[in-house]
Amino acid sequence: MTDGVEAESAAEEHGHASELTRIEAFSDGVMAVLITILAFELRPPTAPTWDALVAQLPGLLVYVLSFAFIGIYWNNHHHLLRTARHVSGAVMWANLHLLFWLSLIPVLTLWLRAAYSSPLPAATYGVVGLITGAAYRILVVALIQANGRDSALARGVGSDVKGIASLVIYALGVAAAFVTPYIAYAFYAAVAMMWFIPDRRLAPTAAHRH
Image (cartoon, rainbow, N blue to C red; front, side, top):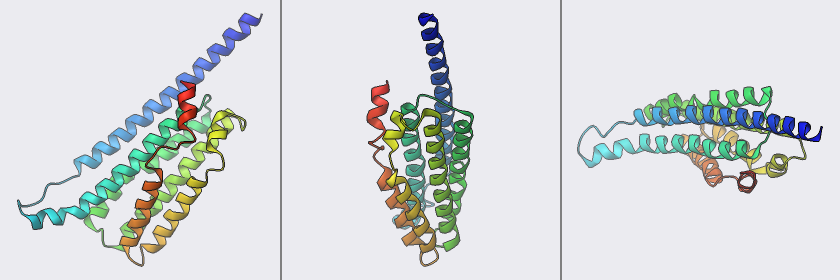
């Protein structure tokens, strides 16, 4: 009887691991495509001169910001899922919700490159960054509900002060965009710097799991 229970538990655990692997593989593929689209939108200087090169720098900086934006989500998303042990329908929909908002980054990047000194594109970029951060938070909550509040995942996430601070900074950036877009970009870059190093709360837990 005990062997049967253990076998059933092992099979269930394997099923959850397979679902998590599928979610991670699908998400990795989507984010890889988004980064590829960003790269395809890059254009060389219009002439072999310093003036032409300088003219391309704002667009290149926007590309770097967007690349970092997607790359940071990919990195932390990896650690988040590797820490989890169980998945639910709510987790799958929350993950798709996150990917939807991330999918808007390439078109917003193209808009910013064409009008980086205008308030509306800069503010819109920040709004999408804010909603994407909230979507990531929703995914975290869904995973905690699926894994339990006493799980290693829940302990790793903790109070998520950094995540909440990121949302506040994005909101400040959106407001600042209507004063000058360049202040808004500084706020967005500050969020990227905060998350550039993967969340140390989750990385050790994920390593222990594997």
